[in-house]
View 1 (cartoon, rainbow, N blue to C red):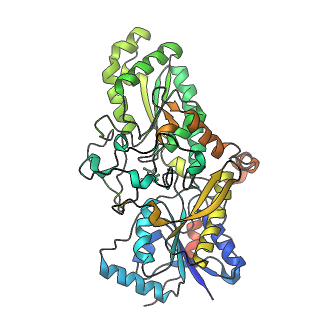
View 2: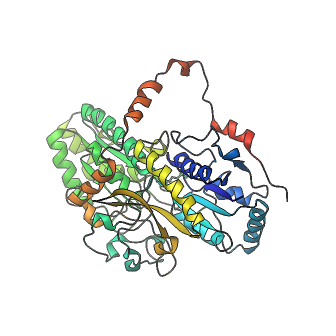
View 3: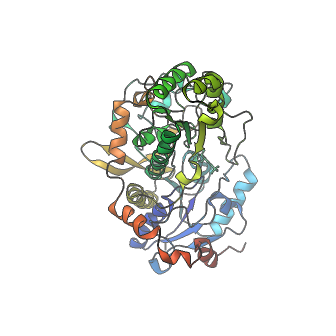
Length: 460
Ligand code: F6P
């Protein structure tokens, strides 16, 4: 009997259960036992390794459905440090007790770093997830062209210093898009559209901060909400040009909607709003305060006079407001695109384990002729010559920095992913579920309660 384990690491996405479901369904058809480790890598750090059987008698447990956001296994940002040799030996021992033949880690670039040391003694593959869409490469050789300077910009890659290729073909992109991204864009676009009408009515400047860390795919995707200005982390903020564009737009339409990626930096590479850097357990910078900082800069530049002369009794502080879309863009049910491809990638991850492709990643590729299709890549292909995995950045050819909008190629990329990404069933789900009368008489039923009843532990 073959037995695989699966875990969800890093921040959650709406498509995680769909990926788990795809893996379990594939395992069912091959009569493979699948166990889910609770709370990502934290679960294997726990001496008891809490876990659940996801397919007793090769039938998927009813709690697992691709329509539900989040992860029924729970996620954590705890990671594996290969330098802690004693801890590594303990983890190895525990996984041996569990009699697992291989493991699927659902995660992003940070998860690959955690998976790598495990794969030295144990077959592991990655099924990709991230709303940031930053797992992959713009073209296969990109990683060999990166410059990386630890001393500068807190060790983050400085986009201005990356030579790279000026133009790419869309079908060259490695891991074209990651489940979770389309749903995040779906949420952001609704947010932008809703902020628009209130900014318009009150004649205000709205700054909407969206997630994505160092990568600007989510802000780029927000263009479906037709914001006036999109600022992505890949392009350092040009305050003079921005001020000029905002003034033009404000005079023309009496309000402005700006979408700002949380990782946007100034011309010196300093991240907006990050007065002191704080890190999560996986060593990622926690992004905070970019929108507030941009507001402060704009208030200083425009001053109260700009607004006072155009609209009486209005200060810069009250005319400019900020909103974070925040974790709503990571939560809730996944839209059709994410569900469908997440299921495919979960299945592909099982195939990779069966084929013995240790340390491989299931990827989603796209070509004009074939559309989307699952594929794979060895994780090391994402590492630079210093062994580092970098977030994929929005390629310069995707963004028009003069107009603060996606370029033609950027729009073509978005069209290939998002046209038809919402299914009729997604719309029906909202119609039927949102104001369902029964919701007023029942409490929210957390999947955690049902899963808790199924959790087993090992005895050492
Ligand atoms: O990487 C996914 C992501 O949602 C980022 O876009 C964001 O910066 C971060 O996670 C937020 O993490 P947390 O939920 O741990 O605060």
